[in-house]
Length: 209
Image (cartoon, rainbow, N blue to C red; front, side):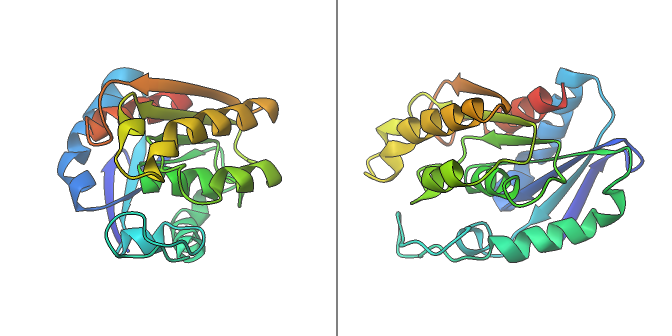
C-alpha cells in the first residue's frame, strides 16, 4: 500500500485511515478541518488500498453493487498497517483508526482484532456488510471509544442490502453501548456521497476529544 503522511510526524496522536483516490482528493481539507475542530497536534497516516472491495473486507461476500465480489483481505491490510505504526505501540502515543464507507467498516472490524487502537472513527461505515453486526455481537470491541455516523438519506438506497444500513448502524451502536464502550451515533444530512471529508473529520475529532 502507498502511504501518505500529514500533520506533525512527532505528535503524540496518530490517526490511521485507509483511503482511495477520491479520499485523497479531499484529504487536505479533512486534515484542515480536524485541526480546526480539535486545536490538537496530530499525525495522520493515509494508506491507499489497491482493491477497495478486497483489501477492506473481513470475509468473502457476494457483490452488492456491480459485479465485484468482496474478498477477505482485511487481515493482510491490518497486518501491514500495524507494521507501519509498530514502533509507536506501547509508547505514550495514542493511536486512532478511522475511515469512510467500507474503510469505516474496516476500522470498526480492526478494533475487534487488537487493543492497539484508542478509538475508532467510523464515518458512514458499510455496516450493511453481510453478517457484520452478528459478528459484533459475538466478539469484543477492544477500543474504548467508537464514533458512528450515517447520512439521513443513506437508507433510501435502491439496493436492498445497502438500504438496511440505518437499522444495522442502530444495532451496532446498541451493541457497543451494552458492552460499555463510549460511543455516539451522529446523523448527517444527505446521502452516502455528501461531505465525506467533513464527516470523517468530525469522526476523528470526536474520538480525539
